[in-house]
Amino acid sequence: MTKITVNFGNKAVVLKKNKQYAGVKQIQTRSLGPSELDNSVKAVLYPNIGGFKIVSVKPQEGTRGLMSDPVDALRSLDEVEVGTHVYNIAGSDKPLVPTGSIYITFNEKVTTAEQEALLAKYNLVLKERKSEQKLVASVTPQSENPLKCASKFQRLKSVARAEPDIDIPLDHYFTTPSASLWGQMWHLENKGKIPDNPKLHLTAGADAKVVEAWKLLDGFGNPNIVVAVIDIGIDVNHPDLASKIVKPWDFWSNSDQLLANDPLYTHGTPCASVAVAPADGGMCGSAPSARLMPLSGTGFSIESTENMFNYCIEKGADIVSCSWGTLDESFTLNEEKISAITKAATKGRNGKGCVICFAAGNEGAETLNVYGAHPNVICVGATTSDDEHPDYSNCGPTLTICAPSNGGEVPILAARASWDEGNPNEDGAFKYYYGDGIDRGTHYQHFGGTSSATPLVAGICALILSANPNLTAAEVKQILIQTADKVGPADEYTEGYSNKFGYGRVNAAKAVQEAIKRKK
Image (cartoon, rainbow, N blue to C red; front, side, top):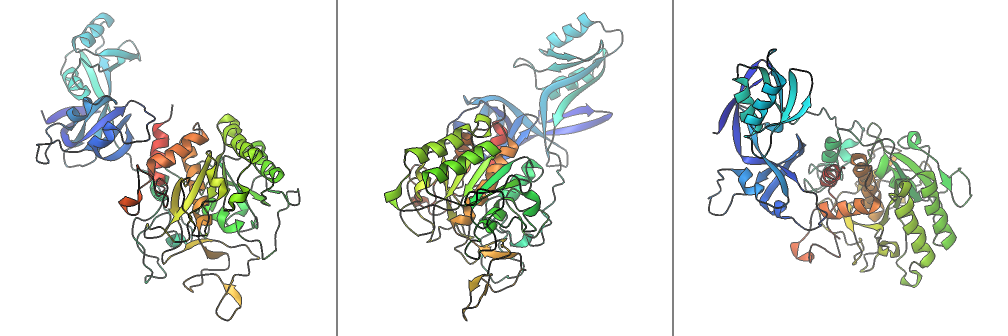
């Protein structure tokens, strides 16, 4: 039967079985590799409708691209706990999924014993009794599907009402950020062009899929998430940062007054903005609702390392973004530094661990920032606006992931410290802020490198924790690895890993989906 008529409320609705989609409840696994289910599915259309993942199913061999019943192809898989058909209302392509529950109201004179006998006859079980005549029943493996059961109950004289519980995708009224320079944020959503400079070349879709992640969250993330940016030259009065500041600290002066007004130190401002700039300012960060813990004064010493990461633990940082380091292998991390980072990554966030991101470095070397070798660190490289590897982004066997930055024709737009004197132009004057020569205001500048890719990933980690705050830091790293897109030439990857791209380019939407799936 491909069509069925069911009453919803006071309306009879004709439903048609969808022959390409199926709903599955998956037994939880922790495998990083592709699963049997992954190999049977063309695409995940919705991560959770009625408790089911809605998928399109690959045609089986010998079917010439057709499939008589997509659910049967999935129910036999060991990792599929429950499979269900997906339906459409006539004239609509919106999927409808029965949850497995049926709300039944019996007529007044039907006794409890008679009600229970009817449930047993149709192999249903009592889920909840609302009143003497009203109850909620659940289907079992022995019963027919909930739509057929409900349809049969609707025809019984002893039943006043029987309605199957169903779920459909809702329209979330998500609004694109109103940031005045939103069109420049190609690394968050790449449409293949920049509004004020159409001559620049970008590849549509070569982005971090952040807008899709916001839609899944139905917003810009949890405002209680704190991203600590450890750097030098963070302008806490910048209009895109000032309202977000929590627990600032300067390790050089040992005070909450951060170093400012020194033109040699401006780097922290654009880094912080790429992570957390708000959705309604000038530019926009990957986690617009997150708060900023600006920490100024980097250092390689044991004492500096312990001070920085202990502060993050004690003051409640959820994510730590570090766009600095060294390639000098003479100064690899010693026992105390390894211990300080390990402590933050395992003891922070009340034992769930701070998520720690470090830049791979911009030397174009076959060696990574020494911090990237720490097993708890997310080491971040860069990709271009064409999903290619930029020559400057360092390569190596401990690179975790990459993220969009400059290196193609289009750099990243970021916040500018008020005391930044800019780069020298052809005349040697310090007033050059935009790579294409188009002025976008006094508060902004073009930015890039793994310095920009790292806070972008840090902000995405804030979105992951917004979706599931119970994740450990190790699980967040695992999710980034598991959900990354394999960009660049396929032969760059060996067993899913590339020294240039790590496990691939970050995909915020897939990462948020996976975080939601892992909720307990």
